[in-house]
Image (tube, rainbow, N blue to C red; front, side):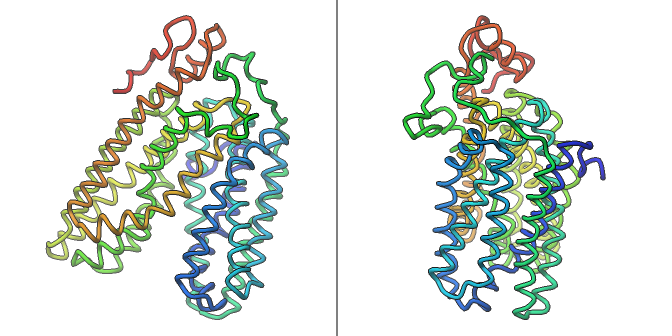
Length: 444
C-alpha cells in the first residue's frame, strides 16, 4: 500500500507530499465550508451557491492565462506564488462578513486554485519524462484521496463541536496547508521557462503556425478543444457520490441513509489502493483512448446496476448500490488515467501550462453543471435517466478515439524527430503515414 501512495524519492515524492499537504486542508474545508458561510458568516444558502458559481466561472477563465504565465515565467515560481495566493484567499474568508466580500474572496480562491493546478501540471511535465507522467499522476490521485479523507475527518470534528472557533480553526488549517505546499514546492528543481516554438526543432509541435499571439491561444486549437469537451462530458459523473447517489438513495430506494457514507469510503479507498495499478497500462495515445473507451462501457454497466436498486427490498437495494459503486470507481480510475495521458500528449511541449489550464476547466464545468444534470436525470427521470447518463458516457468515450486521432494528426510535421515522438506516444507520424497507430490497435 505504501508504494502505491508514495512515489520514489526525489521530485516525484516532493510533488506527492505537496499534494498531500494541501489536500488535507481542502478535505476539512469541503465538509465545513457550506455551514461556515451560512451559520457563521450568515449568508443565505442561495447566495452561497450563487457566489461559488460565479467564483468558479471566473476561476475557469483564469486557468488558461495563468497556465501561460507558468510556461513563460517558470512553472515552479508560478506554482509557489499561486499556492501562497490560495492561502491568502482562504485566510480572507476568516474576516468576510457580507455577500460582496464573500464573492470577491471566493473569486480569488477559485482563480488561485485553477492557476495553481495548471502551474503544477506544467511543473510536473518539466520534472519527469513523458512516459512517467501518467504513473505519477496516479500516485498523486491516490495521495489526494488519502489527504481528503484525513481532512474530512478533521472537518468532522469541527462539525461535531459546532462552534465558531472550530470553523475558524478549519479555515486556518486550510490556509496553513497551502503554505506548507508552497514550501515543499520550493524544494523542487527550477524548471526553465519556455518560449513559443522552442520545441519545434524537436519535431513535437504542431506544424501549423502558433496561435498564441492572437490572444486566443489554446481555444483556437480545435482538435484539443474537442478532446477537452468530450472529457468534460465524462466528468459529469463527478457529483455522483456527493449529490446524485444520496438523492437517489433517499428518494428512490429503501436503502439506509448511512450507505451514502459507506459508498464514499469505498470509492476513496479503491482509488487509494488501485489507481496506480490501473494507470500502469496507459503509456501512449492508443492505450489512453482504449482505457477511456472501456471506462465508458463500465460506467454504463454501473448506471444500469444503480437503476436496479429502485423499487426492491432493502437488502437487494444495498447489494445493487454496492456493485454499482464498484463498477463506477473502476470506470472513474480508467477514465482518469486515459484523460491524463491525452491531456499531456496532445499539448505542445512549450505550452503545457496553458493547455492544462484549459483542460482543467472541464472539472469546473462538471462541478457547475453536474448537480443540475444529475438531479434532473436521476431523481427526475429515474431508470431512463440512469440509462441516458450511461449512454452519453459511452458515446463520449468512443468519440474520444477519433478526436485524439484528429489532434495527433495535426500535432507534428513530417520528419525523423516527429516519428520518434509518435513512437513514444504509440502513434506514428511524419514519413510513415500520419495517424497510423503502432503497438496499439486504432480507435474505433
